[in-house]
Image 1 (cartoon, rainbow, N blue to C red):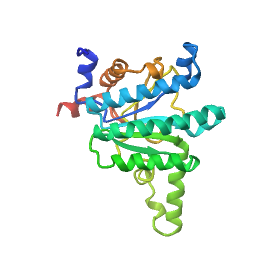
Image 2 (cartoon, rainbow, N blue to C red):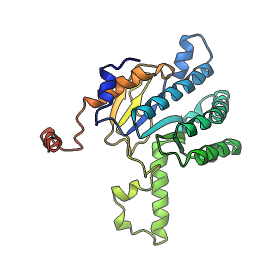
Image 3 (cartoon, rainbow, N blue to C red):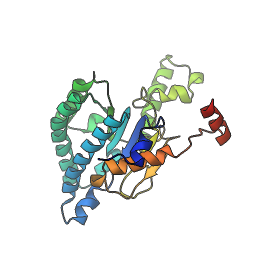
Image 4 (cartoon, one colour):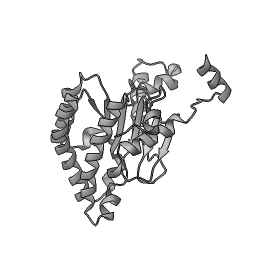
Length: 254
């Protein structure tokens, strides 16, 4: 593929370190083709492989994908069962590829609702790739931002009760250390495919200063070109974090 302006923008120093994506539109993609919804989910797996490869090649440090939310259990039982089977089989195929390409795989969310067979495969995937030093791929499963915050609060409350933590020392910085993947940078860029414009209980705390990007592209059609468009949009933005434009420009010129 020839290098276009979007690709050039993506190679600038303001390439996001961490990209978070809600992969929306699998069902609509299948419906548009008069296919069952599950066909869209299978096609979505191919899009995952593509975005992982592209992010790794471009030098993105962390990619977090919202694969199954805590609210997705409300879907028809048959669809949920097929999704669990697809996840299990996809992990069986992809972990070896991730390991060979120096990608570290991690999972966030409440795993207790999954079968022991699937939990075992999740553990194996993390174990087999834990020493990889390239892209960190975080997959959110049975995850919700409110769950993440409540879980952190319970952990802190327990430590306060046991005298391990002084309640006066609980501030934003300390609280964040109890959240999922607190050792990784917060997302710089959030992408949602499928045309919906909401964050749907995804990484609520971590997205506080993240740049948001929404696209009409359905997830199975998300490819290098649409990724480059998102990266180009990010590259044009000025991230101020509460400061003025003048302060940012002065700092960049220093």
